[in-house]
Length: 395
Image (tube, rainbow, N blue to C red; front, side, top):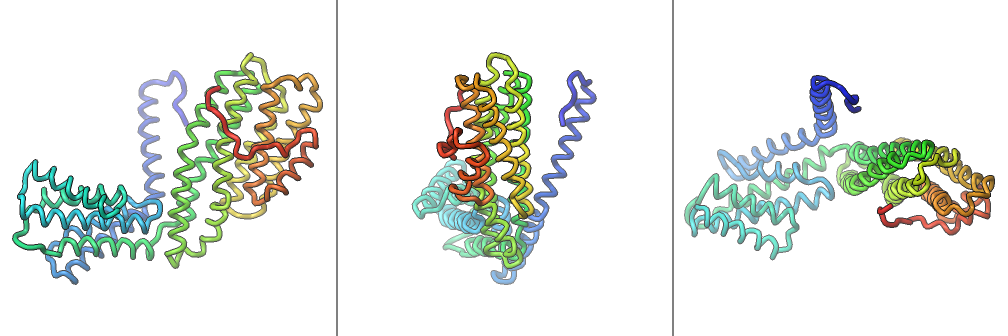
């Protein structure tokens, strides 16, 4: 939804406020369970630190929980451990060094450097190194030295917080299927938009519109890495959380299609770029090309539905093959296009995309090529399709 051209400043302000409110509600809907997780875990960590360590006002136990559950997204268990150890090492170094060098600006810099060096030396990841520095600074700024010797309470608090975070992550897990679905649907939705925009550009011979579609296609790439990270986190949650183990089969389906989804996103970009060559002269493309691209858009929507509620993938296959068949028929019916390199290249890209759509539904390469041959006929030589074909983004 976008404010219409020429709308008044008041309408634009209203649109901006409404859009922000709507986006905020959607983010809360997707993140409320993680917020609840963190609040419950911080409360539990506080009481455990009181019971086990006899502290009146425990601090680093809830801090460790908030840091661990608040920042850990993909491979969550590993990151929680990494973050917890980072907090613990930062606390240890701060306690030891503050008692020796005191508190101050120079001392703070020295403290951060030494804490991070120790975390790197001990093999902590980037998150652990950063948390070591943050924890050291929190302790210096907030608490200062605690006296002679090394009091283990703060170190143990950090470990308690991390342990509670792991336990809560297992007992009150986020919904892994929803997490993956939330990450993957923008990929499909935006791919459909790009394909429809490309088809419209072909129909109208609109070079500028084709360029706009290509710009949108390039923006989808970043979402693929988000999807793969969410998938890794979701599969881990389904593995360690008893209440979410039933989701493993569904997540395995996403995992089996993950590489093909990546390739399909590349094909969307390639098709948008190839369309530039077809409409460069400003003339409308042959109608079957736009129809074929719209069929690929429908195949994209069908693939999203198939992965969301696993049933039969026949609709995906039917639309992908229909797209390839329509493009192949155009070449047979229009002999004058045989020497048009831009059109031939574009049709090859359609074949390649259709092939990867077939693979995404579970067909092996032999079955996918056979189905493509039956749809397009031997002259198109679908065996020459390069499933992972990609090239420069420069038109």
